[in-house]
Image 1 (cartoon, rainbow, N blue to C red):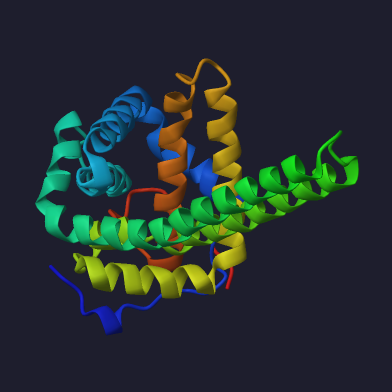
Image 2 (cartoon, rainbow, N blue to C red):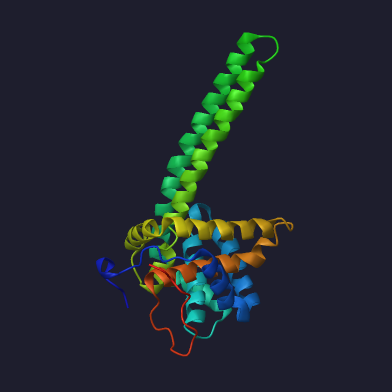
Length: 250
């Protein structure tokens, strides 16, 4: 059943970062290794084809499994590939995410290369030893430049957080899911950012163990997002005998 885009309500300032991570782990712990397999295979398959063509369906499959776990329904590995039922809408959402990423990164690399070449030419024309102050200033500008780019990419990640869950749970079109995700994410921006930074730290800690460790914590990050989604939008058809959703504060 699909839901009219303009009739879906969401809560503001509802995301509790630490609670999302705790509740997310509680959600997957009974089927932890199954979710490790689902997320690992989903990420690998989604990364095989360029432009994220398969990433959207894989993300939808992961959230479909998480939402079924929350509803108390049986979970099986094949749910990952049920994400292809949302192929068209998830592809649109993925492309809408990638386009601004490319718009940010491509000009950024061009500006950086031009600036770097100009700096080298200026240094070579000056002759002699390079000026330490000029070098320090150059590297300072480079750091500031890439920090700005990094912040812009983080903002994009935040506002697209709910796009795939909305496609799966509310059966929205890719465009409507992105629109509603942006609105809801902005209404919960700082709390959602805090949660994503915490899960990012978990992923970084996992990647320190020969990168393989990241696959063991990825399910927690996805489950935390699914929990945040429930805090903001609610989740239909949750069985009454399940534990209540994690608390949210408006």
